[in-house]
Each structure stands twice: as C-alpha cells, then as structure tokens.
Image (cartoon, rainbow, N blue to C red; front, side, top):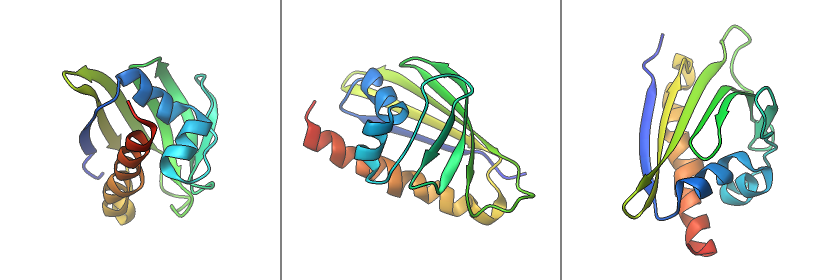
Length: 133
C-alpha cells in the first residue's frame, strides 16, 4: 500500500466557496478548465477532467468535508478505488483545503500528487483571482 497523499492549501476565499467550487459541476468545470459532473448527494457518481476521473460521493458535510471513492480512467482494473478526503476550514485570510488521498496505486502516486497542484490548486488560484473575493 502506498503512503497517503497529504496536501494543505490556503486561499483568500471562504471555506463555503471552496466547498462549492469542488462540488458544483459548473464551478468545478470553470475552476479547472475541464468538464466535470458532480452530484451533491451521498451516493452520487461524479466525473471530472472530461471523464478521466470518476467515482462516487461517500460522505458530504456541507461547506466542511467531502469524502469520495475516486479513480483515474488509466488505472488497472486490479487497482482498487482510492479514497479522497477533503476538508474545508476557515483561516484568518479566507479558507484552507486539507486533502488526504489514500490508496492511490504506486504506478500513479507521483502523477496524482503533482496533479492536485497542477490541475486543481494552481487553476483554482487563477479562477478565484479572476472572480474576485
């Protein structure tokens, strides 16, 4: 089993806005620049990055936490789903995203680790800067 990916990123927007940006299909798509379809209920399936990522919501605590079964389309059939836990908390200047991504296959661990920074956090910064606070 691989080590869990852990990342914390702060933004100058509220935790509520961070949560909505992730879970709302239109906002997720706008923030990442790639088509996403997310459900806002437990058990709902999701896709992101034009179908390259898929899974389902396991737990949703509005404005605070998202837990998903998550996998990439290029993973082997023998690779189990990974588990993604994202929490959103208030900071002095806005909000923080704390991510724990467990059970990512060894062959894609580095790619997923870098992918969060490249395909989420950097585009989110540009998205929020363009949108304003």
